[in-house]
Image 1 (tube, helix red, strand yellow):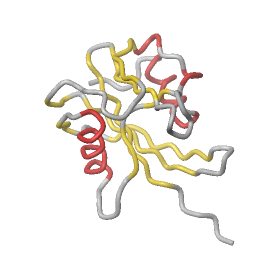
Image 2 (image 1 turned 60 degrees about the vertical axis):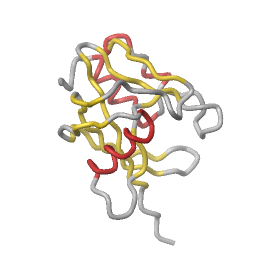
Image 3 (image 1 turned 90 degrees about the horizontal axis):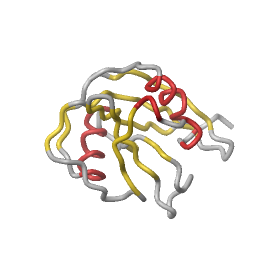
Length: 136
């Protein structure tokens, strides 16, 4: 049997000065209470940047101008889920992010992010943010 194609997922690195917006998954979601960057699944017919703009509108109530794609990570979770994550810098947006679907959201200093509290697929990006990679 052929391996299933990885799920296409997009995430925004929302930067404001030395801070980045992080979101905690709700208790009802898989990987509950782990931290992640806002974003979600790419729907049929969407480009990656269109999908991210839609997800940020739905999850945070903002209109975002999607910046460059800065990383792509393929990750297979022990549970069998395989994802291909596309990370984009988002430094320009209209409106103040509102928590519509998460346990909590917060602006956090990049240097103090804790990779262990994030979803496995996000941890290398967290480490790069802590090291000063990705600028607005």
